[in-house]
Length: 447
Image (cartoon, rainbow, N blue to C red; front, side, top):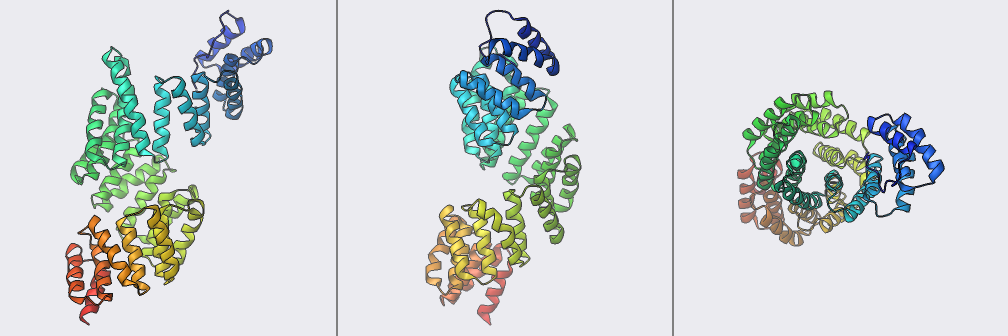
């Protein structure tokens, strides 16, 4: 927690002076009685409440500290240090929306408060709001650049951290080239900071993987691990890019090392499950994903990954059971609704599947995979004429995708356009000879 006093008293006071000395030395148990003595004499002054709150927070009494900061802020609502510390407390207690609001209040009262901007951007990243993080970090980096140009060289480590975060946000937004450019600048700012350089290399590896530069991504991730072999996130990055490169057997080792370092690393559990599924170990993959959900029932990625795995195994009822509590809490997630529709279709509950997929399509209008799944259910219901334009719209987004071509070919066959159906299914198999659905449909046409 920050130590700077908001509106410190003009006259020296022995209790406050002694308390501050102990506070700066990290002796919070000795500092606290002095601040309580000052509080008894001066009343609930914001500065004294703040000092006392710092002591309580550092002694793991965070709810008491939060109550003290709230009192102080009520008496001095424009003091940025108070709103900032309340934001830190809210974040530590898992109340991210409130923390973000407190950090915005801090920035409004102190636009140059770089740590508040960094904290707000970090919350945006944690909540998956990468566009908002990009905006916040862009403004922060511009301000810090100006300060560095005016002689503030000491700010370069902060600039490296901000650019590192921005590069990751750009990667998550799919702006891979832009991410690499920003991360290269972050590397220049990082100097000899080994930990930061390792983190930057890891994020650069992710962006390279996103561009399809598999070998370069693996090489970069390996360099990152060399710099920080005890970093669970970097071991995970190496496993992740190996998996993305189609090397699941090699991915297992580093991901398992990530889990040895940090047994609670949910992302590593999901990546290990993906690698095991690629190696044909579907039961082990399902076990890992259920383990992830035991740790965090709100882990949306684990819900989606496990439900899709169960659908692929034709365990449709189990998939619906996994999805049900998540959809109850998050009723407009198009990915979950899409998986629900696929499971219902597998059970031949076509009307229910159509309703789920229509909701998914409303929530993510134009997504080609949701469109093709909805259209396929319409074909199941004997409404192939309605389905055809949906398939064609999906193919305009992904014209060479084997799955979309296969579904369109099945639709054309249902409409009696057998020549075009054969041509389309042949194109699907040319794109992916292992497309069993397209192969079965193609055989049925010639039967």
